[in-house]
Image (tube, rainbow, N blue to C red; front, top):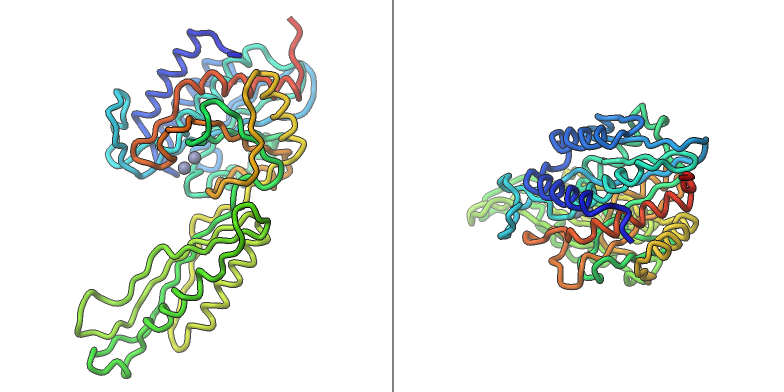
Length: 385
Ligand SMILES: [Zn+2]
Ligand SMILES: [Zn+2]
């Protein structure tokens, strides 16, 4: 089922280890991007864009005739987490690690680039190396780049590897594939006072206590339900660690999660209403962080991915519910592409994504490019000869 020779696979594996040693976090992926550009030049890409929406890189591989544009996306960024492992290619950057497998995703997309030495019959393939996925900014930043109209695809595909699923198995789902999520940070400003005279100040404690009780009540359903919503308190702080002061400031953070963007609008409005009801005389300031929209797979792109995976000899799995974690790949579907995120099993006993001992399994470098290549053949045909 491999689309690549043993020499190419060895090269990709070593490249993956190189990228793994030198992770860069969201918004700082300049060296990784420069390396990718060098690799794409070696592959003879017909056109390369760099500096897309930050450090993003895209490469075009043109077929002989006009036809649709098919984009394959991966991510450049690592995480601000210290890797804990004995791997010979362990991260050499303190406090940073490729612990979501984006090093592997990049190499699977480069593997497709190797196979595109034989161009498709028509249309064009775009390989996109997107910045800042982990913070939810990158896909939108690429789409907002003034050069995006030169790239804009008719179809978009990507993998995310999934620890806990059988190694190499391709998980597919029509419709909702990843949840929307966003972080709400509320800062409270009241008035401190002597602990002996709290009535002369304005403490945020009662409002925060009310919200701690009320915010989780916004949750609804289970991950199998269309109205699934989850409201998780993640951080609370009131005043100083002291006994003599009735506090004058506070902070509360809550993460909202839902299967659809409509449900997210409902959760967001609900959280704001609860704050209005609790605020009293306090000044409050709300900021939103890590805003991810839901990923919704198109039935058409998912059907193509399913046929391609089966043709390439992969085991497929129909997923009965979306992933709870979020992804910014959904922006490409909202931008008009027929889009499908494929879930590539990383092995049943593999540590979870973002665990300090997680590592991308190199054996996926075989199946990943093979299924991507078959997707291009399904849509763009295979060049003769
Ligand atoms: Zn991640
Ligand atoms: Zn990831």
